[in-house]
Length: 258
Ligand SMILES: O=C(O)CC1=CCC(=O)O1
Image (cartoon, rainbow, N blue to C red; front, top):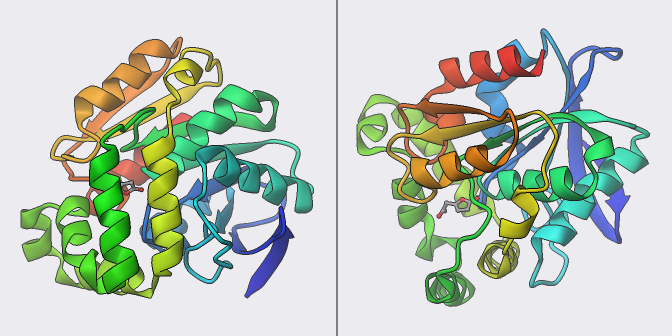
């Protein structure tokens, strides 16, 4: 396993794909880890040198004390690129990973080639929802949030159709640090990037899930509407469209990034 010290925190990362191909950074969702991109890797590595990492407080990365902020999580990506001596990269982030992408595109566009922002939002609000989730997870551990998370992330029909994927996600959520999860919920709760989105000029693809109740299509579409030339794609999926609609998701990201 590869680790790098970024902004005082040990982050787990891995490369897949040949050296010399353009770099594509993948940033995962809340309560998951870099393996949530596994279905994309066979195709992505035909075109990109894929750089995946576990967000602080997730997977095998260190859980620095929270609360985190989206800026801090995005600066971890900048630190990762700096530490690995990558000048510019493509970026694909889902959910909180997309929020990180919004920050990067608004603040360090010169480090990016193209971005895909998936099942995400520039502003969530709903402080009481996140506060109650933080309270539950700090009191009851990941057991207290796993059922809700699985219901939000994947549709009921996908639960029936792909029980192995659901089980993999369940294990990922349960393996997440409750403190890291709570600290990241605070980052989403406190985020307001509505003033950042309208500054983005990096070529952008916005991906929504038609059954995503967490970041509904209208929210994703509104981001696309504010970015000049942005493309908008809606897939038949709930929140984790890269898992639930893996084939079209992967193909469309490759088509856009090339
Ligand atoms: O509510 C969830 O668990 C879904 C989610 C919100 C932000 C994120 O990254 O995932």
